[in-house]
Image 1 (cartoon, rainbow, N blue to C red):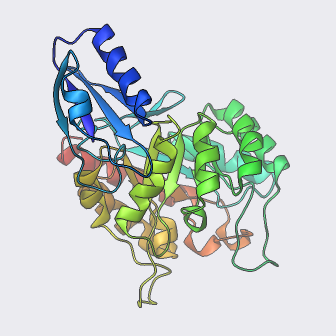
Image 2 (cartoon, rainbow, N blue to C red):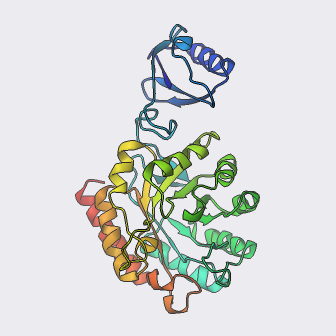
Image 3 (tube, helix red, strand yellow):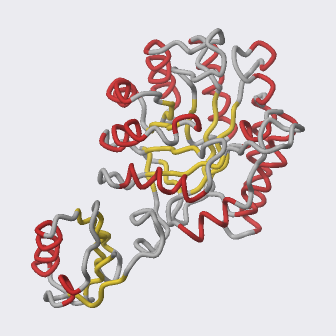
Length: 336
């Protein structure tokens, strides 16, 4: 449920409600809007009774939340949220954000060349995998901490904030030491221990949709992060597994407006993993922007034919530059 405070409720009234929620064995989550304060009431096992809070000073009404996720729901937080990663703003009316870089950090020269190229093309953030979850145990698994060090060096050289994947709870402190934003990959979307650990890091989180996950399952995964008190969560549609084999995955463009209806969290799209082929990346990216995506995360490599992972879906820098121009033109038509 959520407790909606009166517009003229005092801070003492808010604190009294927070204490009452805790006394009843629940966890309060506060959302401070422009006009009033809303307090989300979450907890396990038993149902909160509205009458326990209705008579408290400053309370306007108590509203049950209809969806299985609470803190992620637009009911609890109606206004579009904005997530900040360094100086970059994602969602909440900000311009379309471009996150770009190689699938894997392979070497210092490869990463720095790519980082400078994507910045020149218009990227706002740099992506790159230091730890790589691969289907085969014999595939390149990433450079580990050395890869993180190179990402930090690329950030210093370009000014681009860095997002990189973290694969296990015990790696969260290490990755958080170097990265500006932690990515939870599709294979780990329902790794609940990892979600909690990543949320507790305080870093902004990029949460990718699982290959077979429903939207409600994605939002429940986001709920795990939000329940730690970390509200800086960005959702990513990266293609789902269907019967179709013409592309690596099936891009669910429907997910963008459907998620926007259900949640105020920013939503971005990964056209690289969703298609698996560089020739399809730009058309799908354009569709994502037209559908309302807050940003794009795109794989870029100066020599895709030499890439140690996902070269087939990586754009060359000049193609990424054209994509940025096209996406910005579409956003401008939509007054974004």
